[in-house]
Structure formats: structure tokens, C-alpha cells
Length: 251
Length: 314
Image (cartoon, rainbow over all chains, first blue to last red; front, side, top):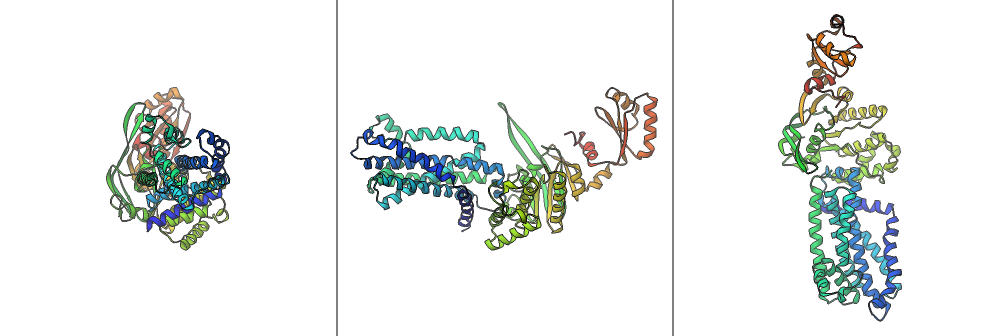
């Protein structure tokens, strides 16, 4: 009960600050929209599919997963600013749950990601994308789990390194191979065997496959539950680890 | 109210490739009574903040024990957190939040209900004369206002003990005097106040009792008056040309002295009668005299006799 109360206190505060400065929604949506407008038209030819709608079915899920990964991984910067302002230390002298300090922040990140995802999905509908609402909600659950994991990871690392200068290259180094090995921008169906082999070890590749299956309307595909399960397990691990970093001594 | 025995903490420090263990706090014993303003005086790097952060449950001690407001630091950190307030040196407010929002949130983090939290926030805002700015964003505040918000945040849950780390550093003289009044007001409300400072006048004027800390250890404890009395008599400072200091020290060999680059300090029973004798001794040795000053011992003299260094210089 205390955890729920503390988490909602932190979450409320973070949402209040987020809404006070709504520029993020523009920044957060601008880039994906550019992909949608300027990159997606190439796909019908490149993917050798029959219609734009089919191309969007493949591309939009990848784009959303990309957004969830990157959006989460870079949340640590805000935390470093909070560390510097002394806000974290001020919270840590109170009896507030350490897990709530993390969850309140990560849940804000999940909410802002889902808001972006909804906007992008709506835009994609204009481009003839069609997806069944139940499947879409499951896809959003996948995105929520991804962003919970990556943002928790980012907070944990931020508490360890305590400086933007260290966090930026670290996160970029993690994100780039993860991105290339997940078939986010182009599916890995035509990839050489060795590349597929490596990608099978990339959990995000499973998440992308699952999300694509959902957008395809293939709810029964094993990719769906496998992706959700892998993301759920990793999200729990990331949250537990990062909450321990909040409990440990930080300046 | 606070009792510590043998509190210790070391850190790993890296200098290039070499790893070194720095003993930041080496066995601190403290006894702070209820309702007093207790001061930790010492130069930067003496271990004051580390000790404070240990007492506030922010870092774990390597050794030793402490009881704070009846709760054991080691076995009941949660209980300690409920009973203390802690105000860090570097500030604790978020630029885009208002003082009222920060205060309400802080109260609620201590488990206080929404309505009561708003009431408490209102109370401390008027107590710290912040009502006027309560709904402006913290980034618009002056240094003194922001520091008052920090302290209000530290006491909103009405703790028994509040730790203030360098509460006046960086403030202009007027804000400093104002802050001293606020701290005395906390004592008047029954709180035990534990501050760190590297200002001699602050320790002297504000604190009921102090401990002088240097290099991770407490070198002296007591009321400022008692500590000064320990250095019996007066201090005479004799200013000398740099090249005449050695000769001056020789001429004054009969006195208890401390030597500086351009002066000598003498600790004497009675300054008024000692000065003519000092002048005569210097005259006889033909040492050119710059200036001569007589003063009552200050806490700096206490620090000097305990550590061999002046607090002003370190």
C-alpha cells in the first residue's frame, strides 16, 4: 500500500512537471513523423509488398519499438539534473520507498511514450494502416514494458555514472547495435544466416517480431507471447536493479 | 538526542592509476543534548559533511554506532529518517517547481495526508516569510529565499533533530543574520539543531556547543566560551618584517609563541602588562617592529593550538 501511495506521489509530481513544459510532445513526435513521411514511402518497393498499408504494417510497429527503446534509454539525463539539484538526496532522507522513487519516474516515461505512440498510430491510419483495437492494445503493452525496462536501465546507469558526459556515449553505444540487430527499420527476413543468428539473441528483436505480428492481426503467433514474456522478465530485472541503485548511496 | 561512538568512514579515491583509501571520518564520538544548537566547526574536507550524511542515513558507516532521537542508526534507519530532518549544502529545490509544491510533496513523502500537508506548507511558508513567493517557481528566488525553502523542507515534518550542512555558506551578510534568527527560532520551537560551519563567528555566536573537527577527528568539544577559556590569558600578535621574524622569535624565546610568515603570536597571562615587556625585549634585540595587537582568544586560536594551523588559512 505504501508503495502504491509513494509511487503515485512521485508519478503525480513528475507528470505535473512534464505537462508544465509540453514541448516534449512536439519533440517526441516530430522525428517519428518525419520517418513516417519521408522514409516510409520507400518501403513499398524495398519490402516488395503490394500496398502501402502492408508496408506500414511492417514499418510502424518497428518505429514504435524504436521510440520506446530510445525514449527510455535517454531518460537518465533528467535524473542527473535532479541529482545535481539535490532533489534525489532530499527524497532519500525521507522514509519514501526507494522502489517508488524509480517507479514514479519510469511510469511517467511509459505514459509519455504511449501518448506519442497513440499520435503516431492515428497518423498512420491516415496512410491506410488498419489494425484491430485489441491487438493494438497488446502492442501498446509491449511498448510499455520496453519503455519501463529501458528507462529503469537508464536511471540505474545515471545513478552510477552521475554525469551526462558519461551517460551519452554509453547509451548510444548500447542503443546502436541493439537497433541494427533488431530488424526495427527493415525486417531481418532477408538477412544472412549469421546476422539472424546474432539477432535471435537480441531481446528487442523478439519484441519487434511480436509487435509486427500484432499489427498483422496474427494474435496467435508465438512471437506475441514470447515477445511479451521476454520484455516482462527483463523489465522486472531492470526495475529491481535500478531500485537498488536508488537505495544505495548516491550524491 | 544524538550519541555517537567511534563513527568511521573511508572512501576509495583514485589518483590516476593508484587507488588510495581516504579515511574521511576516523572515530567520532559525539553527545548532543536535546534543544541545543550544536556546531561542527572545521575546514573544508575535515569530514563534517561525511559525518552528517552518515547520521542522516544517506551513507552507511564503516564502523561505530549512533543513536539519534532514540533510534539506532544501524538497525532502525527508517525510524531515524522519520525523526530527523536534513538540509544539504547544495540546495534541494527544483527550478520549475514552486516552494508550495515542493513543501507539500515533501510532507507527503513523510506520510502526511494531503490536507494536513497543505496546512503544514502554509505554516512554514509564513514562518519563513516566504508566503509572498510561495507560488512562484524556485528558479526566480534569491539565494537567501531558496535557502530558506531548503530549511523549510527539512523541518516540514516537525522532526526532533534537524541537520543543516553549512546553512549560511554563500549568503550575503544580511541573509546570514536572517538565517541565524531562523535557526534560533527552530531551537525555540524545541528542535535540536546540528549545523556544520567553517565560519568562526557563526560557531561562536550561534552555537550552544561545538566540536572542532580536523582531518576526520574531533580535536576539541565544549561551549565556545569554555574552549576559549582553555587558552588561558590573552593573545598578542606582533607584526614583523619578513626577514626579522627569526630574530623576533629568538628575542621572545621566553614566551609561548606561534610563528607565521610575517608575524608572531604570543599567548600571555595578561596582555596589558605583557606588551611593554614584549616591546622592551624586541627593542633590546634591535628587531624592527611592524605592528602590535592584543586580543582575547578566538575559536581560531583554539583551532590553532589544537591543530597547529589556523582555520583562516586552511
